[in-house]
Each structure stands twice: as structure tokens, then as C-alpha cells.
Amino acid sequence: MISREVLSKIKPGADVRVREVIKEKDRERTSVFRGRVLARKHGSEAGATFTVRATVAGVGVEKVYPINSPLIDKIEVVSSPKKVHRSKLYYLRTLSPKKAKKKLDAITK
Image (cartoon, rainbow, N blue to C red; front, side, top):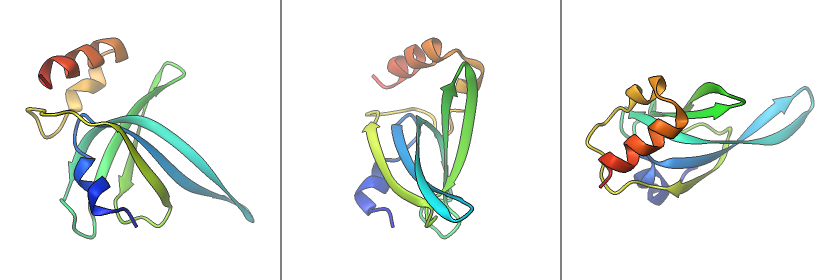
């Protein structure tokens, strides 16, 4: 279960590292996915989710994680913006990683 302190830091624009448990046949392993939070939906209710986007090998990858998933081992918030003026950062999908970082730095000031 994710603590309330970490949940309050997961907001659009935050840079997070998600450790998820992956089950392969009879064994389990932990995989780490690091990226930027694009959106958080449905508050803290049972079906709440957050979307994380990262660029892996030059290709944009997005994962949607349920907040109450037992497969999430740990969430580390690497950096959290002070203030972002939008609740959904879907426009970052069309920008290169370098331009997206520059744009986020501009809107968080």
C-alpha cells in the first residue's frame, strides 16, 4: 500500500520511479520504470490511476498504474514541481524529451 505522503507528491509534472512486481511463470522479479507523471485521475478512490511517460530507446512509452495495485512494490518521487498550471500534461506527448523538460521548467516557476 502506498503511503498518503507519497500519494500527495504524485501529481502532474512529478518525476517518479515506480518499482513493479512482474510475475513470469513460477518466479517474480522487480522492474523499475522511471518517467514523468502526465495525469492523475479519480483522486484517491478505488479506481484511481496515474499515467507515467518515459522515453525508452528513443520511443515514448506510457504506463497507467492503478494506485491501489498490489503489484506496485514502491513509488519514489524523484522530483516534484512546485506549481503546474495544468492538471493533465498530455501535450508533452508531442514534444521531444529536451523540449518537454524545458517547457516544464518554464511552467513550474
